[in-house]
Amino acid sequence: MKPITVVLVEDHTVVLEGLRALLKAESDIHVVGHAQDGREGLKLVQKLLPEVVVMDIAMPLLNGLEATRQILRVLPATKILILSAHSDDEYVDQVIALGARGYLIKQSSALVLAKAIREVHKGNTFYSPSIDKRRGDREKVSPQGAAGRPKKGNTKLTSREVEILQLIAEGKANKQTATELGISIKTVEKHRQRLMSKLDIHDTAGLTRYAIASGIIESGVRLTIE
Image (cartoon, rainbow, N blue to C red; front, top):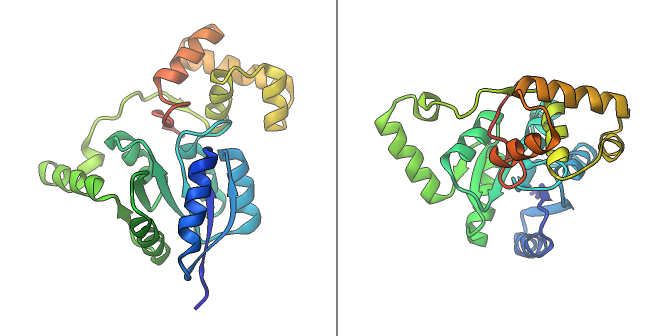
């Protein structure tokens, strides 16, 4: 049987090496590549076309939520499994809304990770037991489940605006941002102005505080993305 092809996207080298070692023991799973930030991961997935992507959320340059969104926009058949240190319901709801097939916390065992990869490859969903239980409890309270919960922050940002906001929060100057995204400095400046207008924030320090408060650097985007 042909092994399941997997790309790992994780910014911590020790965790990445550990994942590769764990999955190497599984004869039906083959790690074909790895990346250490969301932007590199996006490029690698487009190049290698893996069947499953194991994705962290908190990563530099492009966080895992936005990387997930962009991958599924161009390669909708790709199965994405989130592997994160954060297990808040809000993060789980976001990745499910974006189209990810599963969500595991990083304390999961090798057996659980391998099982999750196999399940999402089949087209099923898979969650860590604690997350699965909370989702079931919420379904009992509200038939709509996550869809029935109010969303925090309804500010709508485009994919490009989210990327630029993250780079601003990481301290990148306009020139660095332009180089990273392959666009002109003038285009970066226009996006910054739109961000300030949409968010009614008119300085870089304010944008940075907003990005941090929204979790863009630490644990993903808590925004409604268009």
